[in-house]
Structure formats: structure tokens, C-alpha cells
Image (cartoon, rainbow, N blue to C red; front, side, top):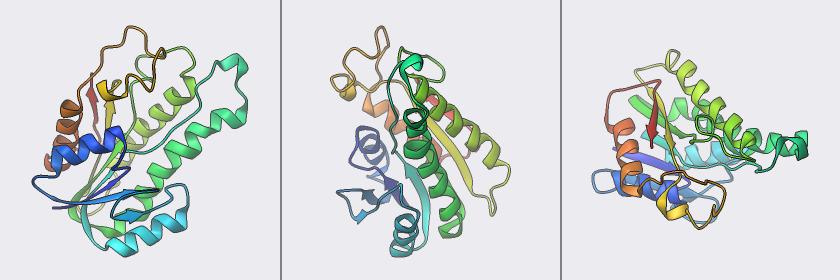
Length: 199
């Protein structure tokens, strides 16, 4: 299969590539690296990406970030970072990509742990994760031509512990290998409308 991985250079994207790369043609996409460059927050850039790549069998999105901070100290603009930088870019990958995905293909988005296991300062990320999970459940019933859509919701990756030092007290970490298996299940399996939890 021809699999587009947006955010291929990040920790989650690398796990997805490792989980699928040996069996499929991977098109690595990123803002500053990869086979194709894209600004995921720019709709025209997303459209250009699909035009460059042409038809594909699967799209994986491993992108997005949001604001970390206490609710009492958060502005509306800071809260919207999770929507504008994580939710809308991934939704747009689906909306713009449907015409470019082969019959029976798939989309796999990425949410995360914080809407089911919260931390202090994580409400923005929790809201974004919940929005993504809700979108794929609702979108699955509307997808045409046998196209499937799922989300991967991993806990903190072992390789990212240092980056988020102190933010996830008591959380168990997950290996990149287990996260890669989840992307394999979504892309190579048969399920749709599912949030695949890696915890």
C-alpha cells in the first residue's frame, strides 16, 4: 500500500513509520523534513500535498500541539491552540483527502491520553483529543467507497518522557513498538470508527 504519514519525523510519526515501513510504500510528510513538505495548518498547502502525491491507500496524521496551562490562567486564545493546531489540521487532512484515497483505504488520526486520564494543566489537550475521538466516531458512518477512519490514542511514549518531564506524574509509559502496532491495526485491519487506546 501507499501510505502517507504526516508528521513522520516526530516521536509518534516515527513509531507509525516503523510499524508499517517494511511492508508498504511510505510517503513521509513534514513541515521541515520528509519526502513532501507541508504546512499542516495551511489548507492550500494540504491541497498541494495531495496533488503532489496523487492517489494513496492510507493517510496517517501524527501532528498537533496545544497549550499547557491551568484553566484559571488560560485565555480563550490559548485554549484555541488545541483546536487550531491539532483538531482542525487533522480534520482538514480527512476532508481534503477523501477524493485522493483509493476505495477501501483509510485515515488514521492521532489524539492522546489526556481526555481519559487528565493531568494538571492539560485541559486544552484533553479537549482537542476528545474532539478528534468524537470526529472519527461520527465520520466513520459517512465515509464513502469503503474508506475507514480511526484514531490512535497513546499514553506518554517512553521516548518522550524527558520532553514532558514533570507533566505526567504516575503515568505508565508506552513503547514506540506498541504504538506502531496500533497504527498497523488501523491501516492494515478492518475496523472503522474506533479509538485504539495504547496504554
